[in-house]
Length: 109
Length: 117
Image (cartoon, rainbow over all chains, first blue to last red):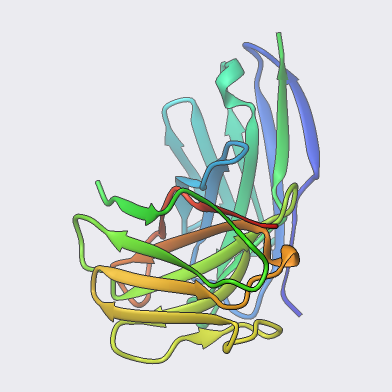
């Protein structure tokens, strides 16, 4: 079966750095997405990785290792507004998005 | 950027009635649209995938006769929840992509919160 695992909840301090991990087992791989979702709102796109390595975009970076079936989202200089759920999603061989359950990130002052 | 709108943003209805939710891509042609449902504190659950002019593909466990999807044009898809019941109360989100495959990200609408009394 297809499976995406990410921690249910994480807590971090304002101004700090946090890494949210995602491991996946899917039938084929055509890219990995990270989305941010604030409570009661729809997800918004953060990043896309299809090749191994690190993609940096401002305070957010995303890393992918296809051989390990592993990705992480790195958030730097955390702000209170970063409190949200972070969803990892993988596009399988049929180009269908398989979603993780999301990681709820709580930022404390 | 690509914008997807949904209407209404929230709706409250009586049990047994039908509710139609519209999803529109405002500045691009969406070859594929997706309908998701999300219960509180849970992840997105894909309900169906629709391509313009063809029948929607429903995920396992989703009743196609209860959740009617019409993708009439490249910018509009509708989801009708027929004979709604309280257990259908949820956050319904649509998304759209401009490509059938590849790296194309899904652009999400703002969601519709349905409450069935």
